Length: 244
Image (cartoon, rainbow, N blue to C red; front, top):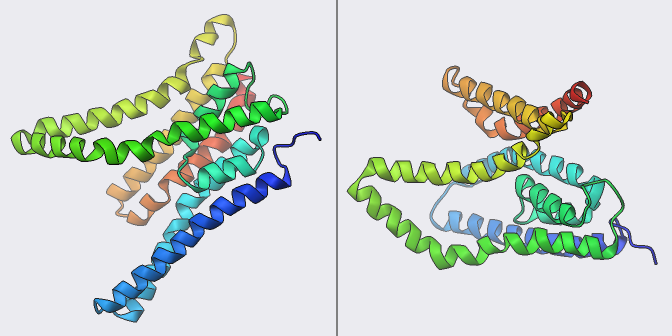
């Protein structure tokens, strides 16, 4: 039997896991609703909170759908759907998948995957991110305690430390964006495409920040990320045509 990344059994397996996650969400929603009533919250207020939360959940969900579409070309729909519906993220999943494929001499969407190649990619995407699940309860309390202690002694250095950790995380992904820029010296401009796309997305995010700060359109902050993602991806089409 020929392997397919969109095999019905893969949809079933992914659907079962996602159904379990949805069941958890419904369970805690009901618990929260009952607890709100127990502490005397008005029913209309509870409805308003639920509707507001549902509306503003749509914005981040757009980026998830975009991620599934972007990864589905090479990995099919079930695996990206599963990964981005639970604890995955577009930036991580794309890097993990490309690293696994490059190790096998392939690239995302370049060719149909065999069952072994598919399993390898799935393991890399899944096992690697599991580190965050067990690492948080093991070290997070100690790290947080150290940061609180540092903040009490010197607030300025505490802010520098937190910002440095965030910049370090961003730098890890920037390396993936700039890794092929040197190909320009070999006559290929393809390495500039992700850089240009990043610049477009960054400019859109900056404009959103200006709108929030200067024009006081605070609702934009909830849509800035998905909009910058969409515009960045759309810009990749003319940028690729321009750079070849």
